[in-house]
Image (cartoon, one colour):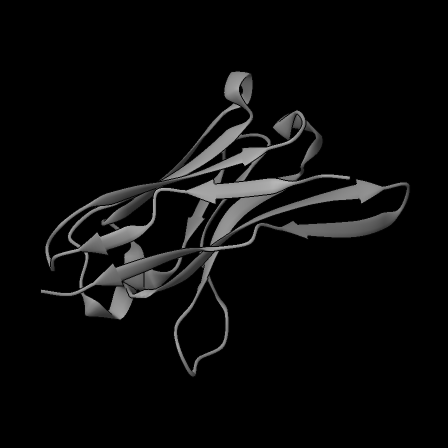
Length: 119
């Protein structure tokens, strides 16, 4: 069973930075796509950034130019570097990974890590 474990969340002041990490229990090369989603109180979960096996990246408009997703196959890790954080970035951030098992698409989620942007 695949497990994704996030870390790096916390309290940060507006304008600050944080880096989130997601470690997979196995090789991340098995996943077609990995990414970060977030869910703020009272809101639906939304895509933040994704990265494919080939390294193609996609970002939500709200984080373009401020966030950067990267992966390290040797460490089975996907990271999200976040800069110039503001209150709207406050949310629980979830790591996600997707792969095919036979012909079935399967999604995996981490338990989430809280990011709070406040002075």
